[in-house]
Amino acid sequence: MIALTLEQVARAVGGTLHGTAAPGPTVSGPVVIDSREVTTGALFAAIVGERSDGHDFAERAYASGASAVLGSRPVDGPCVVVDDVVFALTELAKFVRGKLDPLVIGLTGSVGKTTTKDLLAQILEHDAPTIATSRSYNNEIGLPLTILRADEKTRYLVLEMGAGNPGDLTHLAQVARPQLGLVLNVGPAHLRTLGSVENVAKAKAELVQALPPASRGGFALLNADDEAVAAMARKTLAQVMFYGKDATVQARDVTVDAEGRASFTLHTPAATAPVRLRLYGEHQVANALAAASVAGVLGIATDRIADALSSAVPRSPNRFQMTERPDGVTVIDDAYNANPVSMRAALRTLATMAAGRRTVAVLGEMTGQAEGTARQHAAIGTLTGELGIASLIVVGTGEGPDTMAAAARDADVPVHAVPDRQAAIDLLQESLRPADLVLVKASSELGLSAVAAALNTPAT
Image (cartoon, rainbow, N blue to C red):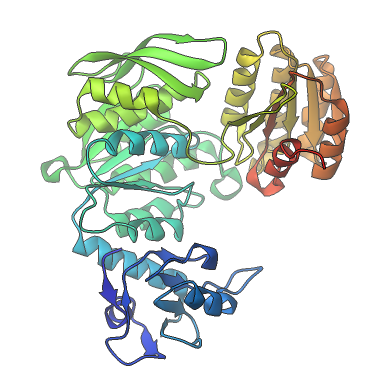
């Protein structure tokens, strides 16, 4: 973050100084909400959550080098006290954004946001100093924290934006003020709060509606292969460019090797260049094209884009994260989140990678599907049969897992239904064979990454 005195922080957020005289210490490090991430000069934001109170960790934060604390009550040390810490983070991010002039890229979509963000960051980093969202910090807390990592040297600011409710992207765009907006896709995610796929499309369109007009540098990058996204061209005053099949930016001659990695020829208005992705799954081609479309608009040469895509590696955990065990078992942790689109993509990639190996899918519920839960989970169960998945372990109980298991049995897939993570771990540790290929996937609330972690932990 840019260096600010604590008095400047207090003025920016409408807070009150405590524990120090003005101007107070200088905040020269990052703004963090986890005391374990404090470094010298940091500002520790003490958020009161459902399970913990950040103020209880203020002493640890100071001991780790924090200059000050931002909280909703005084603590024993230099601090700024506000009514609402999350709102204060937003105000501080707005203040810092106003002091800087980076090129801000906002991106959203029902699936693929984090991977695309990571790919785009790895392209842009070769061109100029770049700050991108860590992991998937894409909400009203994570986005301000990302902006606050920027400083005077930052040229590109890549911001993942999530939309669980109407108005979310409008709010995030007001904070970040993106000049470029990238929309990947519209699918059945957050249906419990948004109600329908049509409402998901309206929520995602808020990003392009918030962009400046073309006359002031606004640019919307849209997926031509998704009708709901392509239709957003009518909802923005920004200049529009499409990527996808038969679009301005295309992938031609797509192939997938036996390991599940895609290669293609990248076509842009400027040139063509070969790409061989290190990520797994044909669905990553669309994410790579999305990143390439942004980089092309920013003037980066096509061959440099292709080289960066070909060398890009996964950066965010629990997203098709592969671990090879000494016995030849491969464990794929893709349990960060799940909806019908990402679940199908993961299963198809698993089947592509099999190459004679036994495939084991450990699947949990896709939450947030509202009244479509039974139908969506049954379709996944049927798909496991179509893909020839050798064994399915369904974790959890309820309408979704139950219908998934039943549909898979009807498709002649051997199914084991277990009530919880520990039961899944116990079953897998007893039944895995050398060289098995294991996929673990579910919505993040289920915490199935713990299953993958247990399988990758050597027995003691």
